[in-house]
Image (tube, rainbow, N blue to C red; front, side, top):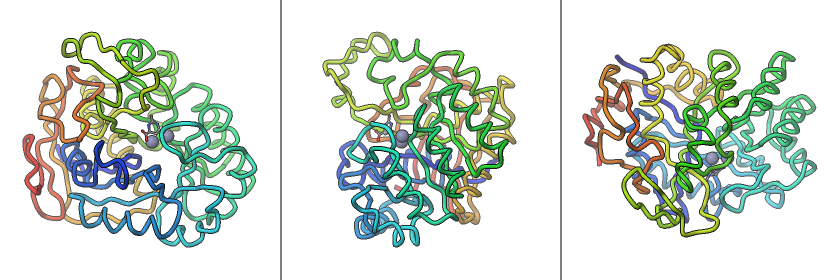
Length: 354
Ligand code: DOR
Ligand code: ZN
Ligand code: ZN
């Protein structure tokens, strides 16, 4: 079976400043191994991409160093608000952090958020990290200022229901969910310890079930929120592979990698009849392309063996962090081949363009 090159519209590639966790080359290699040929990368780097100068330096590096197409988000910061008109000419979207998470980027309070929303043009999406109450505030701003608000990594029943309601009222609101919020729950968080810790945190099975009820309607896209941190940073001692993880740290950085597990998980769900292959294409290609106005990729496609059954991963992981919260999980469906702009760049576990 074939898909067009897949789009992951929410990844953290760590360049600049966190290259020991991931860089454009290793992150894009992980993308190809997972069937993705387009990435949208987040601006919570060091320095963060809140000025036109830093953004342009990073985008130039992305173009030079990566094995697939990478587009960088602009970052929002109250003190760099004057940069937004220039950034809006270049980036496909703006990212605003309304809750605490990894990295220094955070817009504290609703007033600065409203100023930022007004300084960004109506035609391009404002992606928000907004959990619970801040999601409601972000949706209100969509209505008030006529802007396109995209809610990242929706994880809870109240949030997805709020978004369904906003859409029904005609607001320009879209959203994404991550595979970890669709395939893991609080019990997995206990089992995985720091390797199951991310923001938003894993939710209850009832939240997970509610997300699945919206998979063919309210949910516009699936994005991995690929957020690599090293095992050392996670403070993890691996006692025995896939049994008891314990952390030696009190506050390991939140985030899990996802580029290489996203498509296998979704193909597995399709093999089980929980999702159609057509819907996978809508969630991973059609909708992200439309929402972020991304160019099409000629002569680019992914070949999958939708029947292959194996314990994940079926190849050594390409992400620099080298682990996955889904290690050992039975999957049905794997990437066989990726053709990118006319060239075979990945085949049966091997990147051919490295
Ligand atoms: O778990 C997370 N990790 N959530 C985020 O919002 C940021 C990300 C990261 O950059 O590590
Ligand atoms: Zn986030
Ligand atoms: Zn993120």
